[in-house]
Image 1 (tube, rainbow, N blue to C red):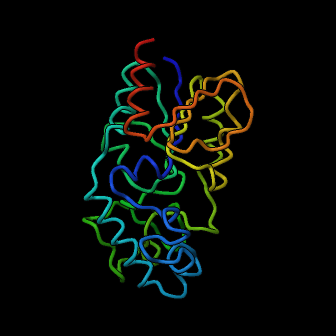
Image 2 (cartoon, rainbow, N blue to C red):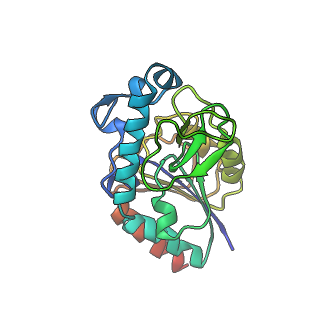
Image 3 (cartoon, rainbow, N blue to C red):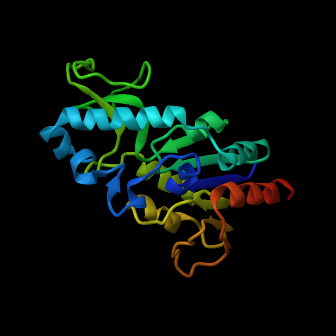
Length: 228
């Protein structure tokens, strides 16, 4: 089967009702990013940070996958699909996609405060202060904060280099290193860019621009690919 690599961003989740900080000039649900999404914030006020991600997790669990998520899952019927997502929700998995790489972690898991490789499932929507990892450190959301390493970026780059079809959905390509992944895709590979505001992807060849929101553009592209 042909290898399809999909890079998704906030736009696909926004249609399921999940807001991102880029919606409002660096604020995420009314919070300054520096106060809730950095290692320094955790050091200064871990209770505030923990509560912030508990509330975001609750929102994620209440949200439902949309038509774009389900269309990408359907694509697996005829293609070898890998989804690389910048999103911290689990909507791709809940829609049925089986091969999802989370560049920035996934909020429905917890992790050790001292070793990010130690991650755990969460029972319900809340991580409580006093819940510890096996090394004795406080559990926190399994989310990559600003200033932290992005351990999955190297595997993602390798996957992009092997793509035979590439799709970019709902991302402004403003957050690095994720924004640089499209550069690893071979020039001759068809690249579908799906977004109401098409980002600047350079002058490389074989770009198909679909200026639509994800719930409209993704099902249309998937039907096109399934009919080939």
